[in-house]
Length: 59
Image 1 (cartoon, rainbow, N blue to C red):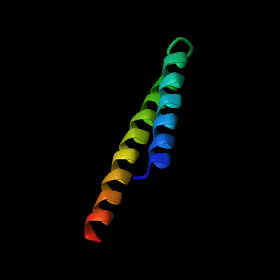
Image 2: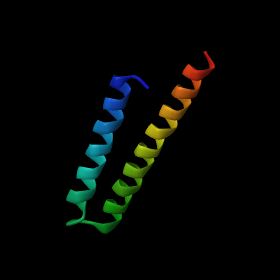
Image 3: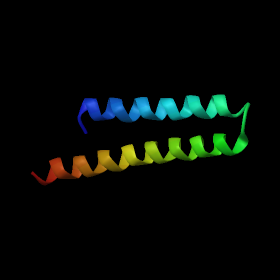
Image 4: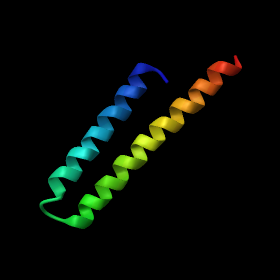
């Protein structure tokens, strides 16, 4: 995974985490949604990293 793509995943994950922290005070369901989005973004980042490293190893 190149550095720009990693930066995008990190930034989006942080935005979702901040959204989770802010929404905890207002609405629990919204906080749960942001938490799920955070986990999904982090997992997607790991998946993209694994696929890109496999692609590099094949070549």
